[in-house]
Length: 484
Ligand code: MN
Image (tube, rainbow, N blue to C red; front, side, top):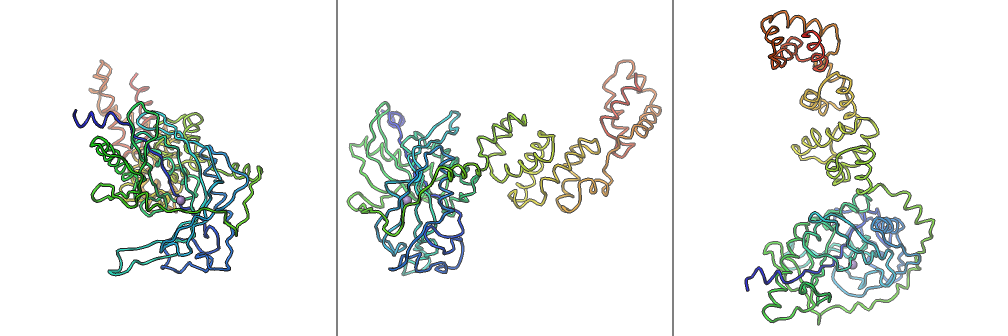
């Protein structure tokens, strides 16, 4: 049996858990700042570390963000939300427990549909619950000690847990991409995996194709980029098959992915698994969400990528390709939405955004929110072209760069200053056309005898005579009339 056939007999079964750090101003259960990047241990009051006598209270914005994510993933939102203590000690969790939700997660029974490998894929979402983050341990800064920064202790998280519906590493990759897009559109999390604001763990098992059972799963952690999620799943899939094929058994354990070696390594086996001894958090009353509250959150949700794609294609008659590229990036989509309000030439708007604007940002390593030109400037450029005052190549190559350098001016001012306005003054262009035709009677005769290719020469000569400013449409029209 070849190696390839060996792997082909098996099917991958993956469920994902994603922790998303919510971008609230304060922490989940107290008013300490949740801002990232402050000096270590400067955002830690006795509440953050749960000193005796302190009382937690729930961050309302975090609840709203969790509801938004639940609605975006088609979940049922729970009315009575209780909190629970999950007990374990770790240096970055000195209070000895995490306040989370156990039996009453705020969102349940949702799903997410997305494209993977050219097909529509649906992954069921089992639950989304609210909890708090632990602090951050740093092992490589001091030669002897592990350093702990508790600024992150208590920062709000939602944990999004899927059913084991994922069958390929590419589906996992696309699922995480979709979740990241959603949290960004909802503006509830910055979605940055490298900085740890979006963290993904995978529960991975294998089974023979055609089987319906779920075999023992291994939890893989530490996949700190989208690419590593994919790599880790592929590596763990093969490791488990190799193990089974060699007569071994997969044991329930937690493994970490090492991006340098591309391998998963044992971190914790079942014997050492924590017994979290969940119990209801005695210091927090349940959070009760009424129907009108949920309706209110729903009505304040922004349009999400799926809906935007539908609108771009059906209302604005844009190609689906344009719609997809624009909605891949929240800031680009929001910019485009503003631009659509300022022009009726939707295709031109999309062409400008995906053409000159995107190239400019790529060349300069910028994100759209750092881009000097507001949508109104792009709308001005489009108007200038639509009014026949310039053409796309002059506008994109000459006016656009100057406008970026002087964003306080209008596109028209720049065009005037650079003497780039094209003329559609019929009398003036007619004079030029007549001049050109009179200066080359032989060519005119040849044209009339059937050499229609000479039209290009005539247009070029008129352009030259006008120093590039004659409106090409008008020039063509007049040449055609005078050459009758
Ligand atoms: Mn968790």
